[in-house]
Length: 71
Image 1 (cartoon, rainbow, N blue to C red):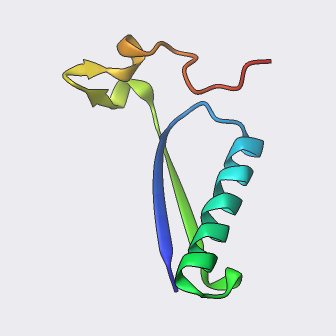
Image 2 (image 1 turned 30 degrees about the horizontal axis):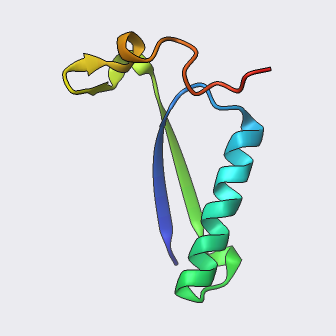
Image 3 (image 1 turned 30 degrees about the vertical axis):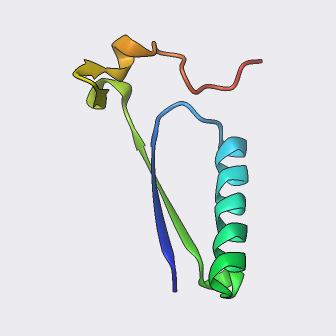
């Protein structure tokens, strides 16, 4: 029973997350030759002010709207 854990900055829509988990599930099924119902995908959303890369908070580096769907 594969379990895939994904960490993302907050801001993605539910539809984007649906597409993501379906794509990951399809890839795991095809790569590991397991049944779709055996695959679990966990999404953990992180606030941008709690995530940093290269010594800089993502809220400062990328801004508040980074990762959000543009309408």
